[in-house]
Image (cartoon, rainbow, N blue to C red; front, top):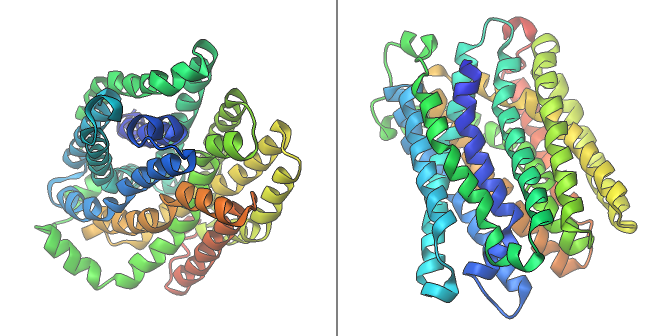
Length: 418
């Protein structure tokens, strides 16, 4: 029950980000209208990315709050902030109605969501790690990412239903707001669930907690190498995730020219596949260690990401897109299932929420959150629809180097150490 209580808010955080990415085209039409659809789409994805640029600040400020006031109090705060951003996005009138105020308000709402998300994922991961029984830390922490996959499936499933009920014009004009309104409706339930959380024994056992964000930053500065290693580890997982989930609907429709229903069905299958592999990998990492799984998956991604996308784009079809996305999902699921708990174990308990969240947020801000924007721009400039595979391969190279560096620092964490 504790896993459900803590992961529920993480579901909302990812659901909001996924819905924004899914409907980047209609959102661009509503708030960033332009005669050139490419310009409108780029503006929408730039706003999507802007939220990630706020994550490092949220990681420091809210991470310090979690490390000082407790995991429970911090997770309630992040959920509340996130909810405000969701309501604003769902209800904000379009550019045609109120002019520049509309895109400015949407940008501010995204920045607030990014600020709260800066520590949400880290706070959930740390909480699950600290309540896990001995030898099951990998399995418990994997449910942080698993809750995100439920969000992917919920957003894709609801999108498929709406596409069946509404015309393309209705979806473009107002139908895209309905998934956001659905997110608003579940907020009270999620807050109620989190109010029932108990503080973790490991946090209570730490006698001295950093008193401020400045003190946390000072603590992390002495472990800057750990933060850099963490950034490398996270780069692989976040680039892979946003490619196979958020970017897939736009890629399928705009590049492969498949139907909206088809690409949403593929995205739903990806979420289901991720949900399957993540806890399997987490449990396996408890037995064989984190590093062997991380090395194998980064090597496979490095070698296969571009060839897989080149095959999918050579003769675009629903079957090829599904096969490639499921293959990438397998690599992502096994990598992330071991990576998140590996990163938790690398950061000292005294500043664990802030340290984990800072490493994660920096990687997402610089690389992962920019994935839809980078891929859209790269395809437009090169004319090569498979070029996102290069972006994934570079991310895999970063993860491979970081894994080797973490092992050199004594962070292998085999099953006995978990």
